[in-house]
Amino acid sequence: MITRRGVLALGATAAASVILPRPSIASVARPRMLKFYNTHTGESLSTTYWADGVYIPDALRDVKKLLRDHRSDDEHHIDVRLLDLLSELRHKLDTHEPYHVISGYRSPKTNSVLARASHGVAKRSLHMVGEAIDIRVPGRDLARVHKAALALRRGGVGYYPASDFVHVDVGRVRQWGPKHEA
Image 1 (cartoon, rainbow, N blue to C red):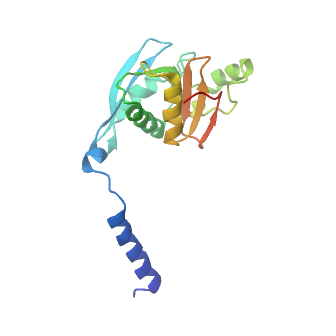
Image 2 (tube, helix red, strand yellow; image 1 turned 30 degrees about the vertical axis):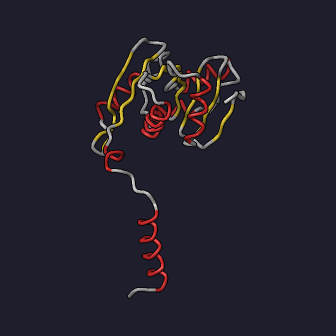
Image 3 (cartoon, rainbow, N blue to C red; image 1 turned 60 degrees about the horizontal axis):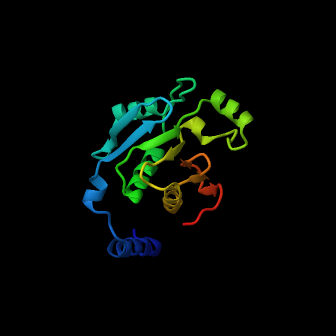
């Protein structure tokens, strides 16, 4: 039995399918790759972490190892939403350069030590759950990286020009740090 509400919902869905753009098959199927350079360990990684509609477990393990807490060597799962954000940011910046990683995962112990030493480290940092990263991008002005990350509106963005990095995370949308000329 079809109700009036059901007919209206079906009509709205049909109208949306005609009006709203659909992603091309190429954009949906395009493999997602990232490059990293860990500034503390000197390690590099270039990996395709998503292809044919699935995340690649071996690549995710490699990312987890490279983004480990370099102070304690502790590893933690890195949220794939963070990797997707970085992939999207790479395209927005039109670069193939590796992300220079200042800080990926941080163990609770490391985070606690850093939070006591600096007001710029959150006590409940998303770094501790694999949902944040501090980066710079060779060949791209830090202000441009900051502006591009803000434009994505995919999470938190911190701007640290004095320390030469941008923080991105997949928490709620927010921003902090000094203003800059865009």
